[in-house]
Image (cartoon, rainbow, N blue to C red):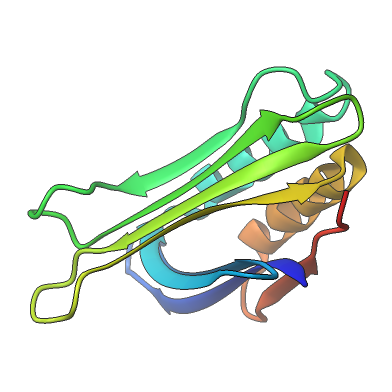
Length: 141
């Protein structure tokens, strides 16, 4: 089962969110928390929606943190065009937490352009009201 889940863990005084991302392509699953402002997450959702009218040309990227040892964690989601009916979502996470075992995970989820569009709508909406977790199943291409 292909999915992407977002769950709010914490909100800072300046509205920054600590978000837990879970993603799976059916064979591999990763979970990693990261910090992001709601507007930046909403902008990612809007770009995913705009991806639909372009026929999936180009790419949309959500990238937070760094893989440098000085950073807490790293999360990257990036779209890429597979063919006229399939879109890939590249997922990479890197747990940079001191005192924990280093865990790096990287895989792609193949889905449809329509599913990416709907995911964008859901992320945009969730960025404005994120009290409940967002669980989204991506349609297999």
